[in-house]
Picture 1 (cartoon, rainbow, N blue to C red):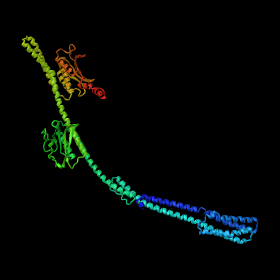
Picture 2 (cartoon, rainbow, N blue to C red):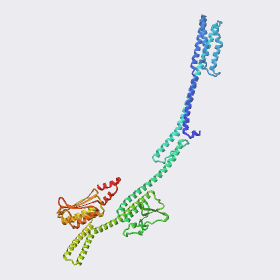
Picture 3 (cartoon, one colour):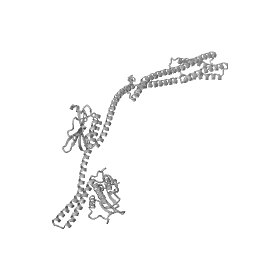
Picture 4 (spheres, rainbow, N blue to C red):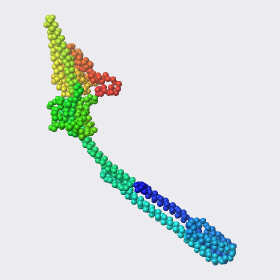
Length: 634
């Protein structure tokens, strides 16, 4: 019973089993009753044939009475034997009930005893001619017919009783089946359909994120257990969903704050990388905005001194005073806040120390102070790491710019020294030797005519040295509109176009950053010297400067349509051409001066730039070694 109370499946299974059992019992009872009624019709027919046989015996006796002969006796004998056989036939006896006190069984015994004890001997006596009264025998046979009729009637009543019993049993089992089905339907409706509907509604409400609905299924069966479980699950899901919504809201706010912080970092990167050397003025606004967004602060930036191995504070947000090592007292980046932020008690705040480094090189540290109650999230820590990376890049670039400026200054000084040594210093050395020669001549009291030649050489040397000095001053005073050799050549051609009185064409086809500063100065000086010779000696009406880079070699050509050279070669003792050849030798190139076929002079300088020479010297074993020169050729 407890199983039926606690299990809906068990109740439904029991109902199905009960219905099946009643159907099976009904079928078995029907089959049993049908089996018992199987010989009733044959018995009734056989009993009816006994009545017909009695009439035949009566008719045979009447004919025998009218005309006794052997045929009639034989006929009576056959009819009597047939009656006896039919009366004792199994078809009739098997249809009789087994109970000895059954009225049908008693009626059969009465009929059989009357035939065997009374009528059969008399019929046999008539056949043997004992002289019985046939009329009396016929009256007895008529009474036998009445007994046979009662037997047939009882057989019919017995068969009808079986049919009524079968009908009653069918009605009983049908009623029982209907009761079981009604009970099962009631149980299914109240314990399956209604709870299942409530569970479906609960699932639908849960699918619409309404976790406040409860199924409220009562009972002890499976659906009641499932309903209570789903109610508990809905309650837990409601709590979890509320927690998730709160977490999503926090994450959304944190993500929005992170996006704003990333925008601040992006905007601050422009100030950091475009603010020159003023790191405080470019970084302080970004740090203050990050403090307001991330609810942290103050922030302190210190630079690492690799020589003294110490940290030098250079920037502090919300600071009431300047940093100790502030180098610009006109900068107020740290002092813009009217109410400087003061740190709380030491126990209420914590400090996160982040390294500002590039690779393995420590550039400084960033102190991040924040309330102890506000734990830094992972996203905030990632943003702070991104901030330190950005500061490290800015500091590193700033240092690289300063170093590059120093290197550039040293390169410029080296180039100036080299130019003074290659041109003016040599001229002065030559003049010094001529002065010493003149002193010896004067000590020896040589003739004035001999000394006049030395004076002429001194005059020519001084003029040449002064001209070289002016050219150097002009070269180093060029105000370049843009970096590189192209701007200097453009200004040079414009300068000499004003001197010559006609335009000087310029053709420049050189990749950027191909020449180093020394090579650029040599090329520029060769061009200026050649254009100066055009101005002094060529008597030309057209000039051009062409500089092209092809097949890893740079070719510089200065052409004019002037009078040209008398013997297609350089004049002897021409100091400017000598210096241009020295510059070509310094560059490791070839220098040529000749007449043009169309008239005029051609000055050509061809050399391999240091960059292209370094590329050519590298082993061409791999695909990268062969790809680099092609890139320069293009």
